[in-house]
Image (cartoon, rainbow, N blue to C red; front, side, top):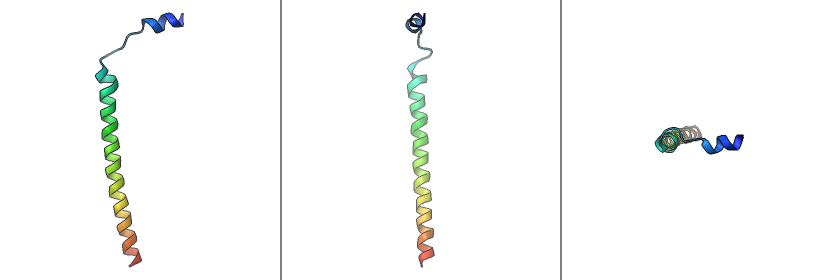
Length: 53
C-alpha cells in the first residue's frame, strides 16, 4: 500500500518554490550573518586594543 502512494505522488508547485527560493533565503541569511560577524569581531578587537593602552 505504501509503495502505491509513493509511486502516485506528484510534485506540488514548481522547482522555484522548492529549490531556488530556499537557496536564496539561505544565501541572504548567510551573507547577513557574515557581515554581522565581521562587524562585531572588529568592534571587539578595537575595544581590546583600547583596554591595553
